[in-house]
Length: 377
Image 1 (cartoon, rainbow, N blue to C red):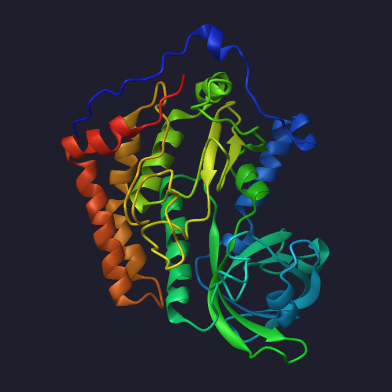
Image 2: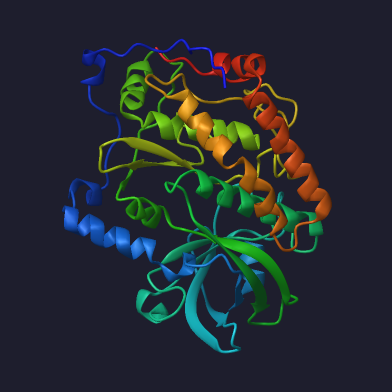
């Protein structure tokens, strides 16, 4: 496809040599050996939880009423998770549970909060949760409305779609989970949700390390030099592709500058990659509670807005080609999703079709993406 060259920020040797902002954790300071990096990569890659895309059938038995009423973000409550095998066998393991998140943890927004499952390492050996510790569980934030179940299925598919583009992404596992209250104070009900790979496992699976960055503003003169240093070492192909993907799904609920709904991974080649998560406010999901940030200037979350930086050395055609390469995989992915309503599936596929129209129209591509990037310095 035709692409007009983008005006880019010019980086000199002096700006690149300024070093990188941010601070590493104690584990990052240790600089693991190549052997240890490979050992961790193999362990993360072979985690049984993500060895299949088949829905996992679980029963979570805990104090559901307490979690729904009190919504602790630190205190955990005891419970059990029962794993139901396809052969009819069951395995029950202990777990500690707490609520998590910000928006969805608020009672004003959701009547059922997202949860975190904390497993004891030894208790899950030999099970599908072997090697896991603290896992995020995404479930409908309203437990008695069908549309909220649809949002979860669609967000799950966005994660799966991003996996098709890059291994530097969070793996997810669909779960059919029954919630049981230990005191009988909550009506037992079964919902579809999904578990998300941990930040650490995602980084180690890619032979990388999580990296903590000080937040910066690329439009603030005091922070522009920090922004330049970050961009000088960012992996241009991965960054460009990630920003195009966010535009594709209509997601503006993230910020590479303020590290909102992204984590940073440093690769073995000393490149830095932003890895996105939390897609429920995207236009493709179109949740009834989602609202665009007024700073973005869009009317609804369905309106796309490009929020990427004008990267130096970025190979735009390479990123575009990666998105083109998965185009024919989108419909089969959504058509194979059990429980996704036909009307929702049709709406979503039409939304993606409009993205590809922009991608292949030189005038629209220039106006909505090339000339819309955030310039630094």
